[in-house]
Length: 57
Image (cartoon, rainbow, N blue to C red; front, side, top):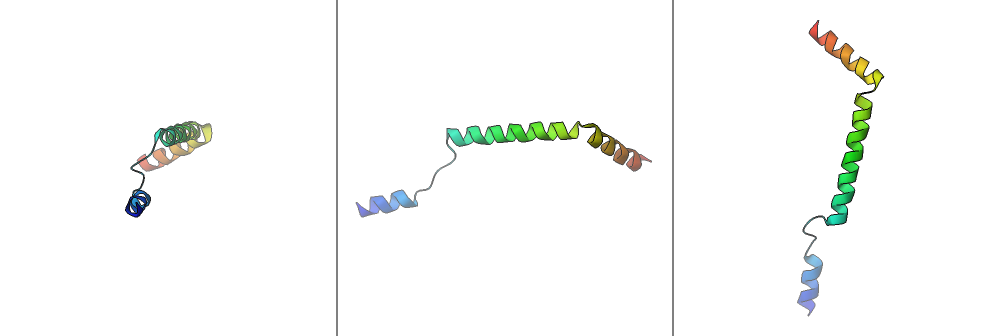
């Protein structure tokens, strides 16, 4: 009986469960959307264009 309790305590979670996968997926999609919004903004686009033009000249 004592050994069963010890084994249960030492046995860790094998991985994420469904709720953790859902939260992780939502966070990844939100981050991707934010990154897309930032990279397609006019300010960032002009900065990236200037950097590329400077590198090519």
